[in-house]
Image 1 (tube, rainbow, N blue to C red):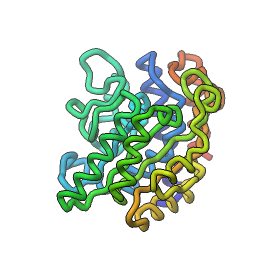
Image 2: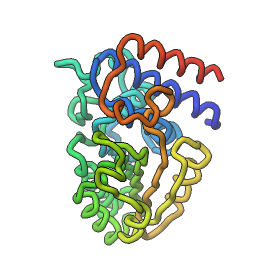
Image 3: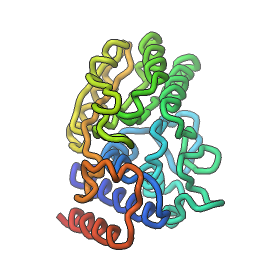
Image 4: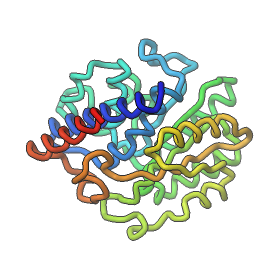
Length: 274
């Protein structure tokens, strides 16, 4: 898939995110939109997956450690055919499949239930170790928020992954600079992020998380790296693609009303045409 096609897929994913959150009247648009390009590349280009066999043993695994941005994961899973896209408009509804955080027992394509920040990456490390111990050839990818990495458990997992030389593990940090209470630098600064992962024996790549050429190069570099896990620090814009949400901390966890929904969808429609 070429760059233009990936951009179209990411734009479609952003539409699904906005539509599902509008229907739910709650949720987390900012981080879902900032991660859309990374998630699109993972599911359309990088990972070995088969929607017709969601539990095949040799599939690559993806753990959404920042589980509150489930709308991005649900949107891409629907686009890939794991379940009908109509399910997206039932987000967060009682008794429906797509809840506020991913549930591996209730949603096809979800490899790990997530939501408690810091725990997803720990599970991903365990998955990667399991592959090494069993001779499995699958790779494990996990997406973290930059606010999430303020959790100590993240660094315990990183220390273990580096110690065990888990070169089948890729940790992606969605570095959009904002968390629920404000700037990550102001709340409890995790900077410099790259140096921290390097200290735990990770190979580190820093990229523009909205540039598909850079995203492609980073994942190729991760595959070529042997003897150590890779951390991709993706610089992104919170709320990317919807102008009034971009870089606004107030859109961390708020759903668009009817007027905002129409404005957002019009912007994304125009971006798709462009």
